[in-house]
Picture 1 (spheres, rainbow, N blue to C red):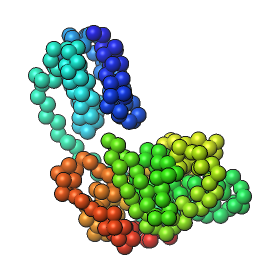
Picture 2: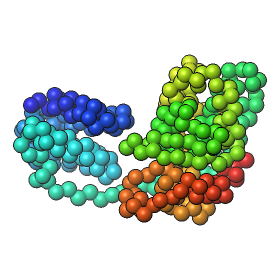
Picture 3: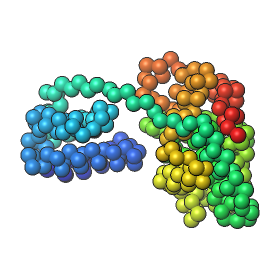
Picture 4: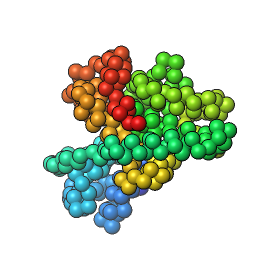
Length: 307
């Protein structure tokens, strides 16, 4: 079978039968497309791809990427060839004859400094106050602040921020339901007064549009706010605040985790808050209640230190 056709079948299987997220499907597609373009001069048929071709491709990856990226790309290929073997498209996956040993590089997560965080939030509120509440720019500023406050208050991923629905945020009981990676659901308590206040103002300003909306955060055309739009929003307020750091949405996630840990919060509570599944061993012993999280966040959340 031709490699490009096998890739199409595999991606369809991942989409329909495994119901993987768009992000995962895109990552699989990019990894397999790279593999195809790199080896097509040697083989364009899955039945003739052997361990030597794989070793050569892995050597190429080693020369270009960090161990973490290499591991992900190899995991994609392993999943692809295992599927082909299971479907009897190939007799045996070539990975059966390869032993891999990759050293994990320890990359420290980048966080936003407290000074920069202070300035971003302060100037975002100052920008809002420049406009009349009836003005479109005022409404957009409220939305921007609500997004930034929620990223920092909860540590949710930018994809989670852009995808949760108006029915998944409960401002009466002050909690947010998130469907995270692997379709794992978690409930996050909303404890910060300023975050809650701006969220309630956002709901009031956008209530007519939110009624029939598939997502909570909307752009000016009443369409779902995109990941890229959130990045632009953060970049905009960094520029207004004179923050020269390259701040990304994901850095808010790293920042809240780091600050909570520094404030003495147990790492298991942080794991539950962020919805991490990679700490598998810890996760087995972790059964943190919502009330416990609420109490911890109310007492320990660093937002109270940001003026």
